[in-house]
Length: 245
Image (cartoon, rainbow, N blue to C red; front, side):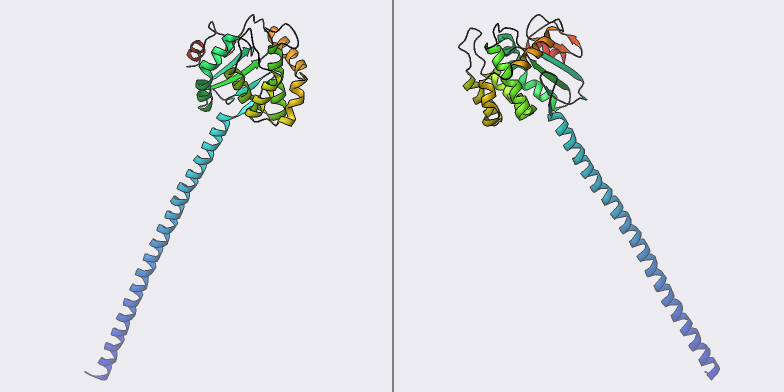
């Protein structure tokens, strides 16, 4: 092979090697690009999934909080969210035996429906049966108002339920102020915040105002149950639950 032919062959071999190296670099670049895009897509999709999970958890927490929330009503306590399908108002006297039957027969079911966001219930205790300011109807409703103000709606709702779970006979013997304080504390109120007020019947003005407000609606007995703005015919737990089902 002549010198010129050898040089030409060397140049060709060098060019071929350079093209091969370039091809390898291009192939690596394409692989890196594809891998980078895939990684970005994985991060985007993964981030979206994580965000969705976190958002759903937050939304679920909000739903749970809203459903379980209680609030003070005008003259009572509200259980369940404002977005509930059915709105219920129950006018009641803590001494009324029919109110007691209603509460004991519907308390658990209404709490479940409230937690599910289906029902909002406002319990409005007042004095219907008491003829004197120191009667049990007045003292129990007054104690409820004191607990509501001093300890908040959740404690007041528990106190409300305890009063019905331990409801006395209409003819007595009645719960004493010591009993009322005991159940208030059991519900979660601080004794120092409610004891002296319950013993002195400090809730009397609230009871008088709540009773006037109830009378202004034209009701003539307890319990009176209002569902979605209309009074239902029955006063039993089955009638109430049927109306909100």
